[in-house]
Length: 337
Image 1: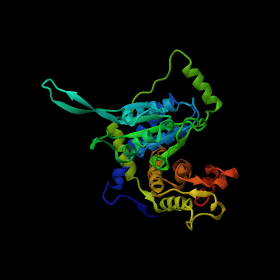
Image 2: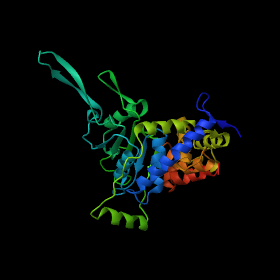
Image 3: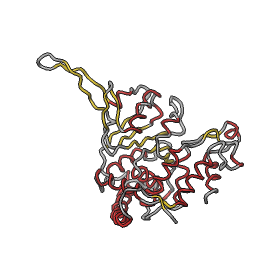
Image 4: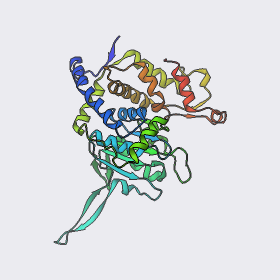
């Protein structure tokens, strides 16, 4: 079996050595995170996969599921400088990006000085992102894609690494503005946060209502995280896994020959090439997080829904029949299972 690797990059022996070195750090990261976040192992794993892949994540769940706490904890554990923005309908783009102010010097001269906004952080938490107006939401687009912002014609580079972890309430839609498809596509994964089981909730009660609460400690530095992100891009991907990614993504596009007949009338629009790129990165990162040296088709199956669900939509007829994106993606996954 052949594998896809960068033409000019580290040798297989160097990748193996770097992977083995990273595994102990990743294990410690997960262990430290689990001291604060209980019963959300899959959510924590997907958030770490998002960060290790160098991307942005959208956490969707009802209030009170520790989404904010999760982002804060991950930022601390992986050594990133964090900032938080509470999105509201009256939030302006300048509240996120920053603005130029006119200053007068002692000699009477006047100059503009740029004051950086909270987006100039390595990890930005956009809390309830769908409560801001489309104009404010679009202020994040350039930053998420190009890693710089333009103010008054001048480009200002963002710190590296730069990640956005946004939260969204899926229930209360009054007073919210749905994220445009172009911005949704910038999120590497949509991470669904569900209720904890009874044992996890018992741990939450014991830890958070007593006198001493667990506090996460840093495990990595930003530089070490960047090295791991480069390592993820160096992990070889077998041709079988690459073919599975292509079959899965193309099967979700209306009009493609790969689309199964059973869902042919259900999908209004499907994922573009950015979904294939996202799967190629995230399956590598998931393999690393789980202590493996190369990804498998099981990784593709596990990440299909978080990578695809915000990059496609059902037709009105399919939704009227009670069909869901999750059910549709499960059908598509059978093509590669």
